[in-house]
Each structure stands twice: as C-alpha cells, then as structure tokens.
Length: 123
Length: 222
Image 1 (cartoon, chains in turn brown, cyan):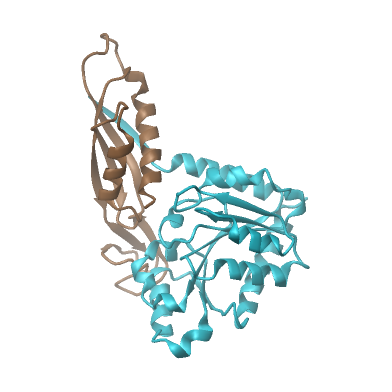
Image 2: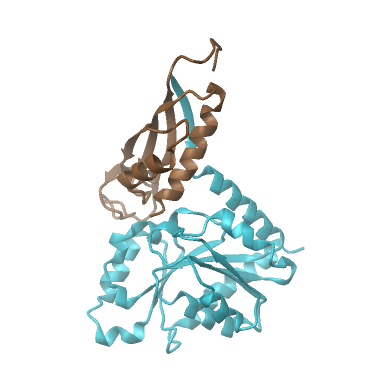
C-alpha cells in the first residue's frame, strides 16, 4: 500500500531530473528494488502509471531490476545469496551477518526522448 | 537519450528524518516509533507506559491514524501533551508528517516522545521519522508465523513486544517457534512477552525504555 508514497517520491525525482530537458518525455525509468525492501513491483508500476498522468513521465515504463538478498558473515567471511529473510549464516549459523544487498530502493537511470530540444547541449 | 541518476527513492524522507533527529538530539529527547497491526495493543501499551513512567519522565505522544482522534483522546486523558496526526489515507507516518506535529510540542519539557504509527505491519517499516528506536508490538492472536511473512518489520525493530500472553492458554500459539523465527530474521531483536491487560512482563519493557531515556538525556543535555 505504501507503493503510492514511494511512487510519489520517485515521480518527484524523475520530474526534477527531467527539468533541464525542457518538457522532453521520459520514456523509461530504471530502478533497483531489493527483495527485502517490502515493495511489490507491480503495485509500484500501477501507482506510478496513475500519478504520472499529465506530466513528462506519463507513459514511461518502469524497468525494475530486483536485487537478491546477499549477506556477508563476519565469522566465516562467506558472502552468500539467501532466498529467505533469515539474517543467519547458512554455513556456520553465525548471527553476525551484514546485509550487502536486498534492501535497495533506488533509481539508477532514465531515458528521455531525443529531439525537440532546440539544439541545446545537455549533460 | 539515457541519463544516469543514482538516488535513493526515499532520499527526501531520509533528509527530513535526519532533521527531526537533530531536533530531538539537541534537546536530549528519546524517541520511540511504535509499530504494529491494528488491534495489537499499541494505544493500550502507551497508556500502561504513561501510567508507569509519568512521574519519572516528562512524556509526550504523537498519535498517527488514518482518521479520527480517538486514540489521541485516550492518551490526552492521561494529561500529557498529545498531538494527533491524521494521515488522510496514508498507511504510515513519514518524516514530513511527524515534522508537522513537532511544532506543537515544547521539547525543553520532554524527555521521552512516543510516536504511535498507523496500524500496519508492512508500510511503516520503510519510513524513518527520526526515531532512536523502532519498537514493534504484536499480539498472540495474530498467529506465530508473522516473522516470516513480514520480515522487514522484524528486521528494522530493536524490540519486539509480544502482547496478550494472558490469552496463550486458549490458543495454538507456539511461543518457541515464534521466538526462534523472530530471532532468525533479526538476531539482535530483544523479544519481550507482555500482557497489557494483566501487566505481566511489562516491567522488562519499562526497564529497557527507562535505561534508553536516561542514556540519551545524559549524553545530550547540557
């Protein structure tokens, strides 16, 4: 349900980043979403689709890359991918583990329509 | 054309949460973000905590609810400063909503701020509000399998209060399984079993809280 709030934050970032391109349409937004972030990708896509209407990001597709949960064990030094939410080392059962990835909620890039920019150079 | 943007989507909230935290820290106020399902016993826990601690610590409460001020009225009856935040449909409190409520409180006169989040086991886990600790409360009637179903809430919390243990004789709740799942999901979680109705186990919670409040007050107050 909080996907709506997350979609709003995302839309704000996208519209701000698109500002220098003078109204050029955003066609694609790339995201990293960790498996343990608590965000349901389809719900986020739906929310974004609804709230982006009428703006530069209307119709933009969200390209979501899900990030697996990776843990590093401080005891045995192993880094491993887990498919459960247990923060325990599957090798030595140590509890001193650090989550290397899996909680991401990041935008990594976006694609903007070329043309109609008055020949201006942009970064 | 492709533009590179690398940003946390929740960056704006993180910034505001840090600002809130700075406000709390400057005044030595300890802040608890209390989360749990609707009906887990959040407001009752606050009432018990206020009753016990009111004479020892100067307390205030922020009540987050989707609608109504019922909980705030319950708390205000205990004669401590209470601020109601209605989220207007949102399923969680965020840094900005809490910031809006802060102006109504005089932090010179507060040692402990308890923030009751919206009843929900998922969404509040994702949004920092500037708290020192996230505390979750869950009741035995919700079932013993929640750690695996809602791992994020368990992972971000420092304390897990298992409430309504007076009902255990009537339920098939496997306390050992619950505890062991919770600790697998978050090995650093302090699991306390309580009953807000009978008062059982609450002394452990009060002790935990009091220690934290004292520590913060001495480390920050000039």
